[in-house]
Length: 117
Image (cartoon, rainbow, N blue to C red; front, side, top):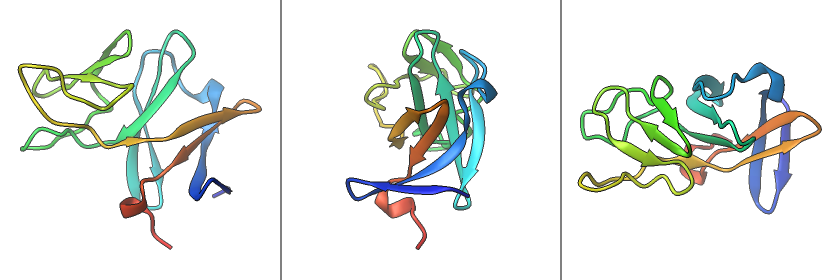
């Protein structure tokens, strides 16, 4: 897997932009972690650990996208992909991952606690 370091973050190649369908979540595996990738219709791409912030857990990649919000597929929690915050009346935060796109390639950085060295 290709790795690129920037500002103390380690970015991993997740695939080309063309491999991700707009408004459809997709799981990629990075360092043994399932990461849910969400390409929005406005061209932005977000990524999060593929685990619901709900206490019972569950996958996020199968959720429904509306604008920059993700609706959890099991609990219908509304998650703001720009912050990871679950919207009221529910509370919580999805574990978001930094994303960048360069030369048609999607790069995702794992949070420090998720990285394996």
